[in-house]
Image (tube, rainbow, N blue to C red; front, side, top):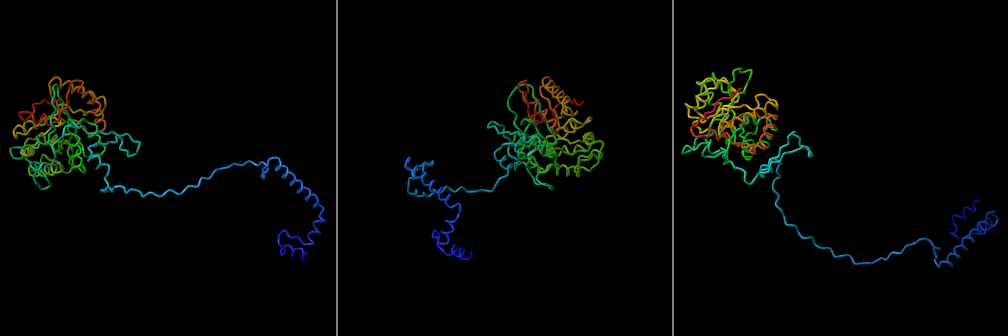
Length: 399
């Protein structure tokens, strides 16, 4: 066995030694294997004779190979360099373009519903604010003032009234600046002719005021005033109090007026007690008059003395005849809007007030869509404040 193993390992392949040939001859299957090999060779020879194909008719395919020279690489043309500026946020792009984007549900999801207001080339443009001719430095910041030649902020910052005929309605929506979603909803959804009042307690009010005015809305300032149930009902830390010294109330009013520029006047926030006491109210209204502003009584307080005090101080003022959402239900708001139209047809000009609640904004938006087709025009609040005579002679229609 050792000799045979050595032969296998040491002999070249295909060269058999004598021992190997002897074993092959003595193998009982050697003849069968040899016979099978001869038969296979015969069949291959027959296939070649019949087909002329050394592959014996196996499936095959031919492909022509076209040898080409590699193309000469082209030098890419250099693209013109574009200077890159600082990245802009979505809100900055909106402000630069004038487009207003509002998401009613506050969602930032890609498939969330949005309202997009694209500026119209014919849209009424408001004067820039602040106007240096109408601004002075105060203890808390810039304050509005009467300019040379008795130039009033009431006139310069007002939204121009568009020409037309027929009954007119002015609507003042108050409370903007506190809730971002409600504020953006009011700016985006309400007609530009509706005036908006901003709370002095809001955040980033200069930006909010600019955004509202860019959309065409005239703006006013809410002045927090003492109600009868103060401090259970608290208008905030800068509330003008009936018991405060005149200088203290004027300082608090100055703080509120320094919060943002461009307003045409002020409107009360609460304030039933202060507005019922002429002695405490007069210094405040006199200061507003000296600054060339107006004042709106929102109609929520019975017994207001604003009209008689304003006549003494020569302050342009008006009182809302209807508080649209005094009852915060859709059917009640719609009923007040219908009554507002009736009064406008009877009197020719009516002022109404409302809050910035989502329900109110929704009903106002729906109501105003086809108002002109019913023969009624929306006008800004300044249209009534700037009427000849100064004080608007409107009767109170508080319920």
